[in-house]
Image 1 (tube, one colour):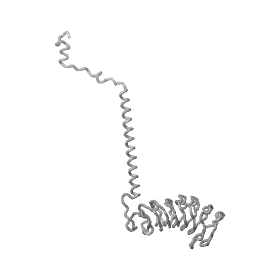
Image 2: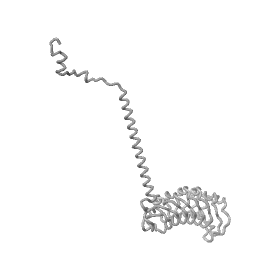
Image 3: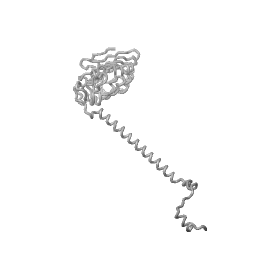
Length: 267
């Protein structure tokens, strides 16, 4: 179904969900003058079970993406660019394992962290939004990704350098004043206290504190056991001096002399 570039001023009917088993490709983009009046997603749109390609770019869609986007399990391409979408990209999109192309460029999206498991993702365009935070390190593991654009956002921290990030050019990261990395990315070098380094240092401090607490608890337990054993030992009756019962007494010559009054025979 291709209704692109038409001056449509009605919303899509919910009945579009009745095409769940037949509709695979839906084009509603408006490449001209934003004459379309699509402002919200029909509730049944994401229930189209066999949907492969959805293009709703250059309309007037506003509000946040709903978790129901995760129902589009068969989708390979979703283009929602050039709208007025806001909020965060819902976590349910992480279940669209067949997704190859995804774009929400030129919107008002504020956050994302849900693409790390989409191993077939080839193109991801998040440019010209209001996304803040760091670029997730997990994106380095997307072996199929050849295009990643986060320019004109509010990102901070280090630009990843592993995986296909080594082949990306600096234009894909423009106008993120908080980013740092290698010289070829045209950004400042990352200082020792970048957010990622700071997080690593924080983790080390937590580990040291936990180990110290464990040692203190062990010492307290050891001292407690020692004191209990020592107290029990004091409460036990003294054992008889067996050595004195089997060893004859020894007396000095002077003691014998006095005891016998000078060794008199009568004594």
